[in-house]
Length: 274
Image 1: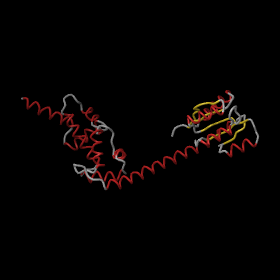
Image 2: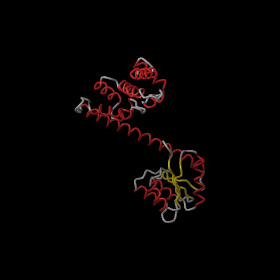
Image 3: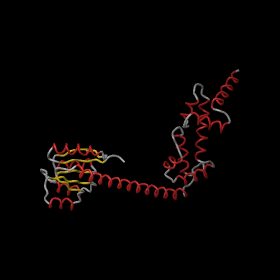
């Protein structure tokens, strides 16, 4: 699911680099995207880069950590804010937690404490990503169901095909040489795989796989009539997985191998010339 982006904000440059090295040493999949020497700079970086984590000093010139946190909350950015500070003042910690900060760590930073906090943030981030993926899948399935209902009422085209099936046939015309499957085709027409399979067979009289295979074989037969093209080249040009599979399918449907078919065509042409 990728790395988390982090921004480090502290008015002491050496502290920023020490913190960056510490985060790298954890190997938690957290990338330090930028550094800021003050609150205003950190705010701009957060607005532009939209990081997942902000690790910030609490007292900085221009804009302290609490004001920075308030500003970020106003932007509705989902950033886990962790404050580090040399100040043990309870009011700072109270204000930070009340503002939604993910943690408040005292300097000098203890590696174990920072590691455990970042690991917890990473786990929460992963859970959110999984939840969003589930929501996207649910939305996709809902759209597919709606499309199925709409498809049932679609008028046929001039050749008697439902418009969804026509779209699939046109796609095969243009992409037969590529890796196409029932799954990928159902995504193209935006229908549930099983529903599309039933619809396609009802409209064409053939399963999707059978239709695609026969279409590719017809293209292959045309290419085999061209002198100089080898069987493996024809297989590649017509979307078959490999030459062995191409030979097997060709023999099953045509009763001979591609080479025998090609030799037969050449023999016919010689006979016509003779």
